[in-house]
Length: 444
Image (tube, rainbow, N blue to C red; front, side, top):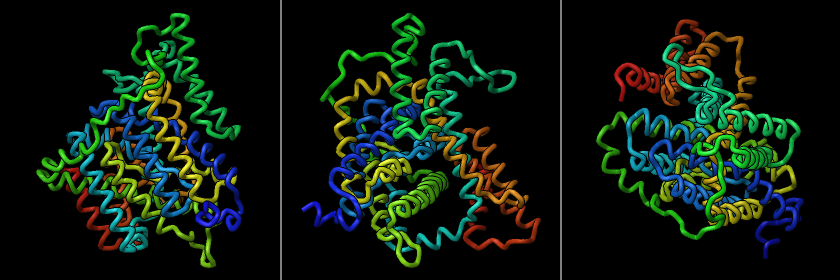
């Protein structure tokens, strides 16, 4: 039955390979179970509820991807999207987490409509490639900054705004050790390097505590009273429904939330799925990824599922390449990954106790590095491009807002293009620029 459905022989794989690939993909993505609760908790959401929502939504999304698209791709709350959700939509714009979830729900429906209607190609051509690359890299810098700040490596300073913290403090030193360990593992191309780095860092943190270093610091990892529990926190389920009451009170605010979510989701998902499809060899004679529309459809549905369960936008993970690299070529890989995500809810106490801010710092920094790498594809010899990418990155960091960084990038690109008189911007681009100018000068 599995052979008939997944066509193992046709895809050059087998049952055993798919199982191993699914486990590998889960391990490569599992760091999100520790990172997502840390980030979303900053927005006022209960960490236990976020972990449950993350695990279940990811599990269901992976299974849907495996059954509908038959792609060996894992899905989970997107890195960068969770930062946008917490630090921009909730903390900067002043929305409640319920309103933010409602925005995720609507943005995912919009993404679903875009996918079904075939508007993807038109939207891809609307935004200059260099701006897309710059925004992705800027979010990478932002994630790394969040990790360093959360561990106390970067701290506030009344004179210089930010400065380096005390590196001998237990949380900061543990985070530094974690970054070094994870970086070494990644450079050596160890499968599931980020997850292994998290585990090793947590163990070192426990050793710190055993010898009395950092004892009592709430940021340090500790062993929980119980390792396994079936007492699940489902308080976030359907919480997005309570957010609709405030969602339409400020239409300009709503527009900016939806645009930011759809923009980041759309281009992150498009690039990830197309790259993974090519890695699997799902390419037709025209060089297009076969079945990519079903993969987009699964991804859009995943975002809706995430909002319903109570987490930021769920999307495809580039870490799926780990399982694909081991031979995963069918949807069974994704299904195995999904099952493991769902089973992880029983280890909620252990995950929350071990994966604290200093432990997850390394994951944020390494993911940030990987996102920044795309800057090599930017056309730096164009001052128009260089100026807009530079302003996107620096303003996203200094304003502590992903949407403000995007706004600056678009506006600078438009102004510089006018001055250069080399490229005419389309109507759609100008509409976006006007919206961003209003956002920058008048707020939403």
